[in-house]
Length: 238
Image 1 (cartoon, rainbow, N blue to C red):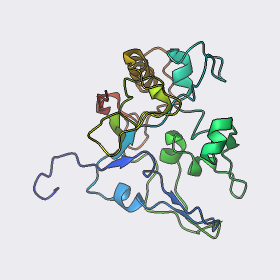
Image 2: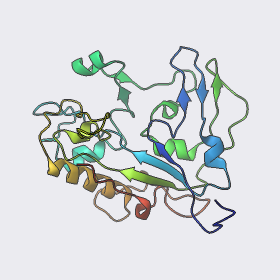
Image 3: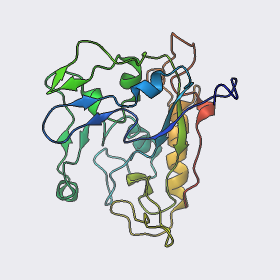
Image 4: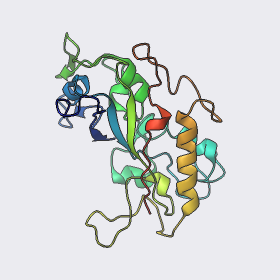
């Protein structure tokens, strides 16, 4: 592609569950940053992520954060770099049903960001060391910290009850992947979609209400933000 269109910006739209690496669930302790050769390639200009990470775990009248409703922008904003897949995860669907949350930790090396998809800042800012048998390799991968911006190649939330609980799902009778978000009653909800997008745009856009430099830092390599706000691509899930 670069040979044909040398000035074109090239990226790969990785799913939120794959962009940061692969961890075997066989107890081996192996950690692979399997997409780092791609992200480090001179032919790739930006890291692309289809961001459908959950920002809420709503199921009743009140959430653990104390947010008054699923539409509360502060509550939604807190889940962009916090909550599920940042602070904790559900080890099983039974655990989800009972709200048994397992903290995300890394006792061996003290790098919990290796295992949490929402920690874009730490993943982007640090060298990546793979592990075999739970032991870090001596040399990092070819990934250069803060060398390329992250594009949110897809960002969205279905306009459905509790859509922010599981933004990657949508209802489509013609699709084999049709499903409801966790604890959703299936009713249409345009407001939760709007609030989800507002919270995200505020989180990534300098000058917006609630914006934090620490949440979207400037690269000393290329002089721009980690996530340039003008490279966020919205997906209109219904």
